Length: 634
Ligand SMILES: Nc1ncnc2c1ncn2[C@@H]1O[C@H](COP(=O)(O)OP(=O)(O)OP(=O)(O)O)[C@@H](O)[C@H]1O
Image 1 (cartoon, protein in one colour):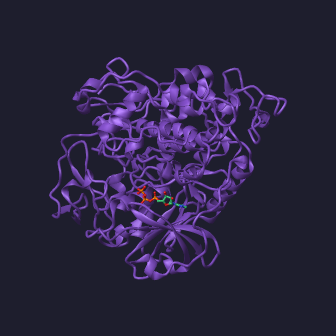
Image 2: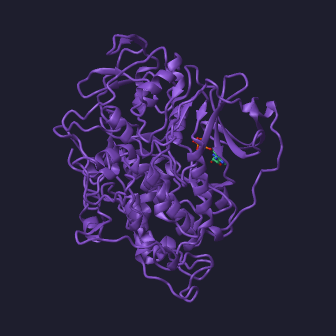
Image 3: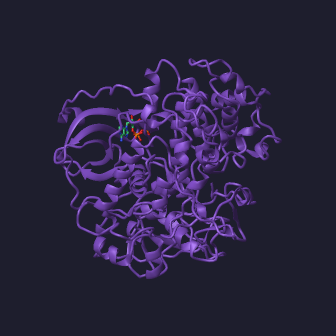
């Protein structure tokens, strides 16, 4: 496969990255110390990557007279973004001795993100049989042969070691979180990984989590050609020193303990302080995002010592999705209102559902204001059910838009889009594809915060590459490459969904609301024009492109031609440009989240509305009513 804008993998060179920015933070910090370090990485004295200076708001000129330039109430003032003292820059273009991103080296930077592709041939192990691992220990393999391909395939949880989840990293790949999963390395050696062999798990931690069965696999699986650790190869931890340095901050994070959820109080406090501070600030400041602080290091022993769900008073059912029922609940001890997502287990005969395990692991490893926070995992009173305790958000975007009379204005849409893109950018920088971005998976609170939820389809990606199903992403938000059966896909699929969401914010109508895949494609082509080899090189080779589609012209502009409620155009030319870039057919050419955040639409008038001035909505269905057992389990 040739080099790609969104990633690269060749048989000869294996998976390669041109920039360490695509690596999970611990990986990145390690690489920044090595010769792989890129010139354009800004590195703070504490080793944390920080690229806030490229935040779009920083580039536009100050507005001196608020309101005179047509600001809507609550729009961000440019002045406030220029308050921070500029660091000293020396002759070599370094700030405080650190190379700095400049327009020049930014444009030179190659844009790579790892690509995910399907492999047609997957050698499957004898499932159900036991295997001998490298240590000579017999390992039991649970699950079914096609579990690597299945999103919903449950795996059995067996033994004390696999009750432990060590999610304190951004780079948990399936090989690590899927218990008892067989992984296939480049040399076709089958390796059984357990959760405790996560690349962030330290030996001593493993002793605590799994004192009886310590299964060792090589913690550093390297790309065979480049000798480079990759997310899916599970490699970061080569030795103790690497381990130490791979953690963005070792201070107090991931302290071991016997509690179910060992969350460092200081870090948690930092996060909530941070969130509330962000709520107060009327601007987005890239330098404040926890992205720069790296993912938290948390460790959960899922069943041992977990709090019981009885410690929460269930107030009302919020919603029921495919994978779980979500309740609003009150922590009896602290009085805190939380969301409890009950993991659906009824249909799972063979153990804990994979999607839920994946969601819990991924959410626990992430830490960003635009990603819903999972506080802990609790168990049902009969120990037969699992609940995720999440921060409570009053609304989801889908519900809110159903009640709105008018669509969001441009400045409101910009406020939401920035938060959405920040979240997606954070995910992609941490090698996570969400794969199910849609309005019902975007939570809103009455302080103007937007957060991504539902990571049931999310997964880590990287190398060695594994087969991923194209049947991801709810139809309306599904990228054309998935609809046309592309065998490889990457971060670009999430950006397509973001484009659909952007259009929906501004029109209040789903952009492409097909009832089946063919209709969905037809609706896309009707608006964006039918793709061809010129607009999308390689299009003709896609399995679905063999079908004859009528030749349609491009007419996206028409969707936004009418004036908005406020008399302004629903979408400016710059806004249309961003939308076009998000809805670009060729995934290689589709804009990345990082690029989108710098798009001029965000810095032109009307400026993004401050969160403080975003519309609020009455909480629906929130009349406190304790949910009885009969409500919960019919
Ligand atoms: N933390 C939260 N606070 C408030 N409401 C929430 C929260 N998490 C989820 N919800 C509500 O529950 C709904 C379903 O949640 P979620 O999408 O996580 O479940 P799911 O079973 O994975 O859904 P899906 O069928 O979309 O896959 C959301 O659309 C939202 O309305």
